[in-house]
View: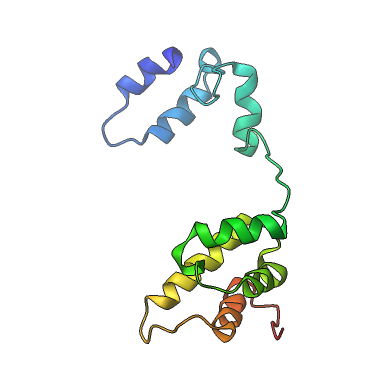
Length: 140
């Protein structure tokens, strides 16, 4: 940060910090001194700027047992849904992926709070499936 401090202080009020950062990056004596890397090391700044993802995390899909114990606790919308339906939803759309469960929970909450306030049904879930992936037909 110290290499950029003088440049950032002299930037005019109308200029964005991104523009100031681009100007200072082009100067040889400023390269590698930006605060873009978590450790502050110039070596780590390059890859972080290239991909914006420092570490990829891989997760195993949730098992059916984990789904049945976690999802009803995750949101009150799932508390009274039959276990067979939760496994059906996981099999057709979520595949043990918690992010997919978050998407379908959001869509179900949106549907439940929008008039005419439909109650839970497999038909409603099929309609939500089409919003998650319109290329798939869910007739099961």
